[in-house]
Length: 345
Ligand code: 5GP
Ligand code: MN
Image (cartoon, rainbow, N blue to C red):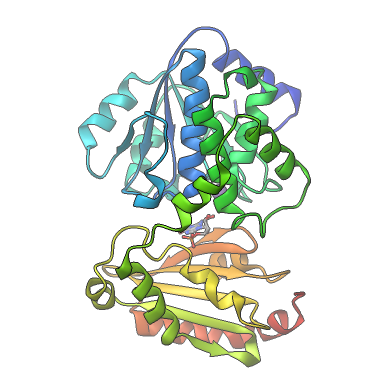
């Protein structure tokens, strides 16, 4: 039975699973975990741990250093590095909770293991168009972040009393990163109400912000300068693109997470409403898209780059060279010319 958002029904089902007997629970995030994925996993993990569950967090691949300062002591096991440990965790877990993704493809190499998991699976996520791969789905695309949604789930299953300082700090981080420090994705006062509740736990929001955003290595800052220097702007299509080859990444001693956020910068240019970043990988190109206002970056990603995401933040990939990807993007802008020029903002 797949139980989707059906108000009280889903919460009483989740209560039945999470409140009562203590369990072994595994939390899973998408590949290349971002602040919302890690923050939601740690936040929910800490609450469940404080209630008495045995909690493990599994992520498909490595995540950036700017997400490694949390005071939580929950271990995050990276499948790419510790396969047998993850296999054991999955074997022992009585319950799986998937956070911040809504299709099995998003866990990449962990996909098969995730689908084979035979105990109940819960999904908590805020991306549009979920696929049915979990038994219980809390899928709310109107939420700013999975972390905000996690807070409301915790509240609705009466575990608010188990929100610790560690949990509050992690959930705040998820909301802060997915909203670009409260600049976008916020469609309801609930976001700030949740933030206010989290602040009651005495978290140091200034320190959290600095821990995430003010820890660039010199290489990373110079790589940003380099990317922006060669950025191509298409004023007639209100768009801009930046791209990085493997050689360039090597020249700037690339570390996981180093290009996080780069795709947002072109949107700071007056009248630019669509920004793309292409990163060369082995045999394919990873694409990131950001937009302002009504331009649907997710439809663009879905239609042409086998991807998806939110209206204003999406991504995908394509089996082309970097040059071919740029050419394809340039051509596509013409097809979207109308939408790009009409878009609000
Ligand atoms: P980013 O550009 O930070 O990698 O991704 C931004 C957002 O786009 C993510 O939060 C996710 O919703 C979506 N996204 C990124 N890559 C993919 C992809 O390959 N497939 C899908 N469906 N969504 C993606
Ligand atoms: Mn998210």
